[in-house]
Image 1 (cartoon, rainbow, N blue to C red):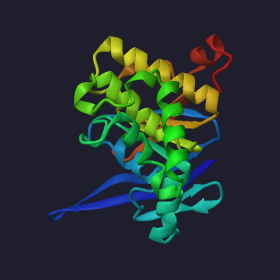
Image 2 (image 1 turned 120 degrees about the vertical axis):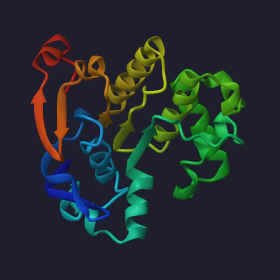
Image 3 (image 1 turned 180 degrees about the horizontal axis):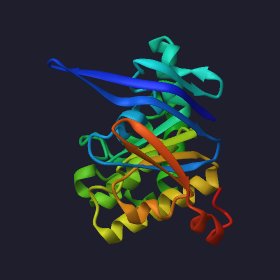
Length: 235
């Protein structure tokens, strides 16, 4: 479970001070699926970076399973990210000179997984996202939707507790957006993940059990009761 307590992130731009996050309090239970929305510059990506340990707050606590990520030494924080948190980005962030298989394997290298096991796990992860026959293809030989599937396989191959996604459908057309969201929701349910996603897409937000809206660094959270009642499998 995540617990954010009084989280502030302050940036200095010239002579101006900007609070990207202004005293955010937020609880994200295990297994939750939370969508974060808000205007550009409102603090969405900053909040996701806090949850992923990619940035530290100016003040406040970012607690994951009883551990304050803001206070961890960098080496331990890197270990938490490697073991417990999977990331999916809008731009896919695949290494263009590596095959799909090799890109997925990169997530296991920091964990000390041996080569044979890495290959097996990567092949299984690619099969789970429908790309079992694309293992030897380079990113440039795949469509945008296929590349995002590789990125999802890479995020999940290490069996994380948390999946964080920053505009994962932002570079896709509407049809492929729906396919990727169906995949993400299916894997969330199957794996029991805590899934937090930033998106500008209101159609996606309407399908989420909970929606957090950030404006000027302040957050409000609402329950999507219609989604819960129409889909009892949604937590």
